[in-house]
Length: 349
Ligand code: NCD
Ligand code: ZN
Image (cartoon, rainbow, N blue to C red):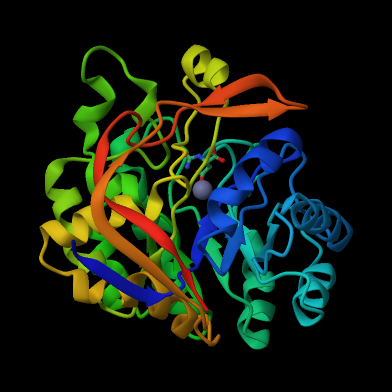
């Protein structure tokens, strides 16, 4: 039996939701990750210091007892973002970063930004104060093909931003294309890579009929892009780090409305490891999962260690959402019903 021991990882892009779903899913992350960057696209987006503090409190209250998990809060940028609120929140350690969603790019992003140039004054202050900018990198114009939206965003929006704000700490989130892989490396920005984009290409959404289980945003692209992402993630290069983009949707909504998002937090580490093993790159996994992120953000890595062993690991078909011992909903995890080759053994202090 092979064993791998790495410093405890962090998740640099996570959707925890609210209320009952939050309470039911948080342990999948808090058990094995030291920190996570919490996405602000809650039903009412997190756009103020007060709402971030309130959301953080509800996250902390949902944690299993004795957990040392640290949620890193983000502020959702809108056309009306108040610069003082943003920078004060950052200086007072309420906000870890700001999140840019182009309007209507994804789940709960109708409040997102319509004209990114209007935020340039805000980017200037963020650059001066060392506040990171996390970007959902897709244009939303209906005349741009959905599979081209990341590349068009890079050319149209991101390129001018990196030229104009060379010191701004930028993370291009959940990258899906070889074009993004190249851009990130050439422009000294960071990028998160999800487990699902390492496993599926766009065929997955059409296998056995229209299949919303594999629909997320940005959508998975052609196979050549998946291969470029695998090469990037497993390279150990400092600019690429772990961000699951785990985005739970109750089964009833996912099945009826096909909402975008893949729930992978119950299997994230095992899912990534499968790919690293196939690439003969297990040695680089700790860099991707536990070192490159903290290094990018100038934070110390976690101290505890995570032990993972190679043994058959059957993934549940559904995760129940429970309220007072009654099952009130279900969420389908990534790799539902599959048997993976790795399993987490536990934390070593
Ligand atoms: C995310 C969600 O559901 O909140 N969905 C997704 O497909 N990734 C939003 C996002 O990160 O785009
Ligand atoms: Zn996301």
